[in-house]
Image (tube, rainbow, N blue to C red; front, side):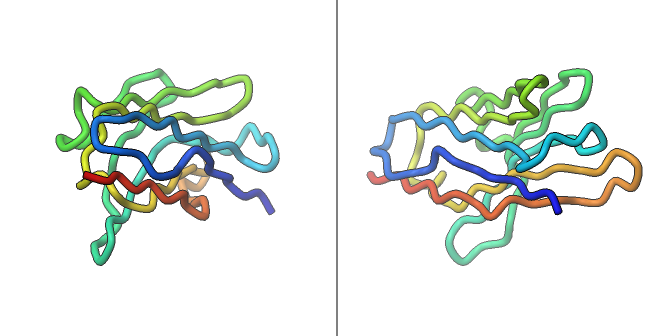
Length: 117
């Protein structure tokens, strides 16, 4: 069974930067790693950014201009570069993949990002 492994979270001061990475435990052509979500403390999981197969990117309004999603297709690794971090960016960040045929989701275990003021 394939899993997604996120890394790069941590504690950072406001204004700082972090880079998250996500990769599947096995390289499978039928699995497309596509998006980042986050779940702030006591809140629902919310969309952060996604990237299409063609490279089109979409961002939540709250992160536009500060976060950049990118993908290394050869390594099937998804990245999220987070700059100008704010305390309200504090959350567990999850990466999301979809099976090409069924569209069903695969989720990572999450990585904690904490931004201090």
